[in-house]
Length: 237
Image (cartoon, rainbow, N blue to C red; front, top):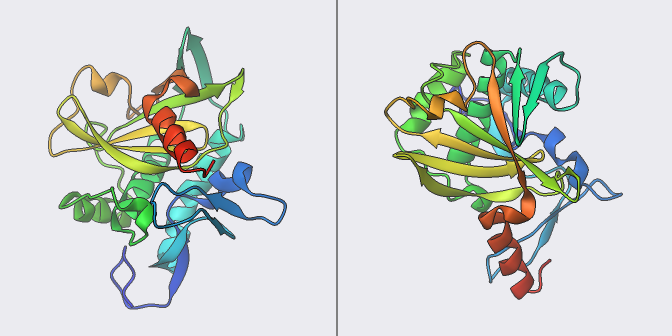
């Protein structure tokens, strides 16, 4: 079968759509993940190593793993960054624009080309091919395209890392945005054919490696609350 990224015929790996390191806080003692379903005809189920499918060849898997490794070090404090907090906004500088942006793009693209039901709402259309070419060329593109807003989720004084939620679609200032929840953040990944412009580009990753993260209480995020309520009504929490 052809690799989804390089399009070459090859033996495909069982690729993670959301990188495995982001599941670490969700695994049980047997290294299993419980997936909560809001689809009436499907019960909750368990995955051994997160949500995977045969998608990438070994070479392309190794390519994206470099950016995942960098992101993992960012999240775990293994990269020296400059952090300044101003109320509920955290300003982070000294990120590697290329590596962190390619990490974001690779998650968005993989979700868009995935055949898993969990990612069915991520419909990239013509942007799937644009993103594929950028990722294959290891080109993060312009900061004005495919930007990402990050919301840090707090709960009871701590970081809210215990949830990976099915991506959903919304609109933000004329752009389509896909919402992902993983790693203690809500990621709003913007997809459109025109530049972000002011003021959106002030809150996404800049070419100089600066981004702003808005801290929010998890119980104030409407989509998280509605998701939890629906699970509760179905007896699946």
